[in-house]
Image (cartoon, rainbow, N blue to C red; front, side, top):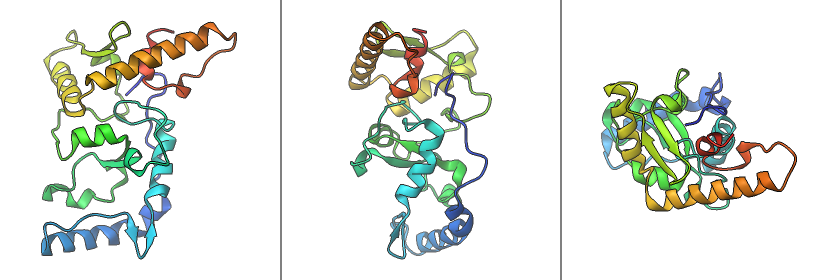
Length: 211
């Protein structure tokens, strides 16, 4: 959720979802109706498509978490390189979105664990075309906190509050990581004459406040 490097959903979904998505979805719905505890898996016929989808999703976010902007996600740790179903497939109303490209987001383990099966229409999608972070949030570089921008009406304020709550975006550990990222960026900026690419750092909305 950031300004300069706004997440843009690629125009076309990965070919594997185009080719297999409908069949996989039909099978998932059938299996869930038979057994509500049936687990979704990216392994199909002994082939794991997880990494292929992760790669496609990473291109949208420059390998940052779609929600908290953590970077880099540890590709060696399966627990920290996850695919989130924005509308959770534990809910029967969303079974049909299990392989829907627009419902999939790259997520760090922390955000995915915080969100779990939570969903409401208030939660902000990080790739909505007209999304502008500053209309919902203030990014306090002195404290590392994300604050609600209450100057743009009740609706946007409520959506900002819900998004912060669901993803626990002001958890003390994230605040500490943000402050460290800010220090690292300022150190590097001081020690180089070249223009730094903020995509090489996490928590870019905070760094944009320093530009």
